[in-house]
Image (cartoon, rainbow, N blue to C red):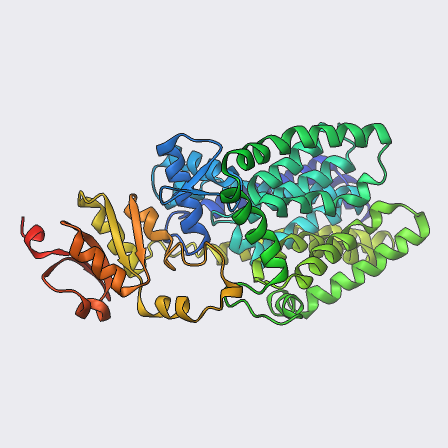
Length: 485
């Protein structure tokens, strides 16, 4: 065992090769059949359309969705989605192209952080654990703003731990905000204990760089668009979500604790608690603030999102790296003596293997094809018509939701997307959503050549129509005279 330990286990080249091989295989698995599944509503449908419209408008600083300005977040996600579609085309693969790469970079950052705070075993172990967590895997192949936020958080911490120049953490925090809006400030808040360790000159330089990066776009957007910018960006995306349970999100105060228990299991949570105890012990022994970082990293987002009135399960994702690091710290702590460390060292490759197996299961590598939902398949089929826009009478359940949602829970975007934002991506032109049947009928009568997507149960509202296409319960119709041309 001693010979094995000296020749292989503690060999840095071996460790680096293990990390490289793991990340290579992990990334390969994530890219398998990346475009197989249709975009899911809501997030993917919105962000994919932002990228598609960026390529049409060429406006790098003001995003549009469905040909209307969109200020729920800065343009970062439109850039990422648009670049992917520029490379791969207007499809699911293009929209998602960079997310697997971002998730791999997050894992590499976790390895580097664990290497600094725990050991090489802790770094690789935390990386392997995080790779297999269900919520992380679920966001690793979808176009979303959560993975860029995770990359911004982990990069900020890694740069500070490795004592990089102040411009680099400023860039990392700007990256987080550029994708996630004001919620991207989590990168700064989570890294706060490390900022306390910096000299005054470092902090002043960091603040200057951060302001130079972050302020210009916000100032430009406010001066040009005023309330069109402030209302969705600040009031609705931040203040309303903190103070009000929006859009039927009436989860209990303990929602995130219950979710972590159900999503990760009692074993991971208990192991993380043990890691927190070891971290507290390390701090009491050494008085080094970074030893408390994983615990702070867990407590801060858990507390913030629990206090906020709107609770959605993926909001808690920023706490997952902390749980992985705390679990790895626990495993390092119970590995007593040289023999214990050697056993943990031999277990680490098995943890990597487990992470890859869980990734392969999540990807469903044997599933080669997947049908689009009916309404998306129909929207795609209707692209061949030359109509300038698609009118959608939202289905009865969506109209019911609009009717009963209290005003206090509404945002300006609550019913902007018709409950099916991906339709705008698959039709690839203007979509007009109708919640009011009278307004829809007025449109149907007044327009000379309307192209309409409608649920079969609502066909009784219209007359003189011809069915142009059908997918399940959804139909594409036009007025009879035009449809016969």
